[in-house]
Image (cartoon, rainbow, N blue to C red; front, side, top):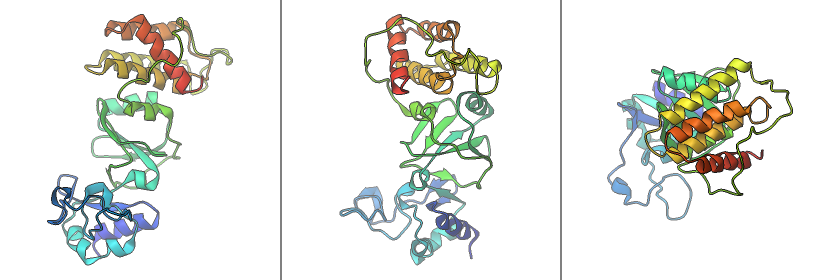
Length: 279
């Protein structure tokens, strides 16, 4: 049996829908009938009006856990020519944060909760339980692969898989939501823990604030959205610790205002982030 097909069948048995990739880590092209989505798109979705093409067409939408389809004659040629196996994370109830370089990995270790990790050629995949929309280039070297997306299969990885956090969901937001209440004066979010960071140490918090400042300072477009996402990520990690102080928050506001944000914009973004997280 073809090695890629063997891997695909093992994934399907585990509830992970696979698909073949050709050279260049891209899916196989649509067949003639499905070219340019003339057929209506998305095979194997069992929805009236959708394409029921038995070939591995439509990229991520072709991913399936049905062994009869994976073993079918229509897929045989694709498995023979395949350069790798991919899977549809959203179809397995998962989200992959694709970290493409050491700088992205360093950011994730500071900003995101630890979870299942899979080494890649240039970086790491961090895998969370839960689904969201896929998005590319949410920050330098970081893509999100979940619904309507695919990721290369590189093994099961190591570490316990965490639930998808708000700090990852916020990365895919294109703009902050409208303010939900009147702007408030600058303040630290919560007390209650004596200013002690429960995650690791005060160094963890200091690194997180520094990375957040860098994220805002490095924004070249969508500054409003970047500021909101950054505030949301900081609060998602530290908002319930009681460790954030006026000084920490002022550093974030200062970085945002240096990029052209007004104090009003900063306060609105902070308030929206607090409200989104129920703080």
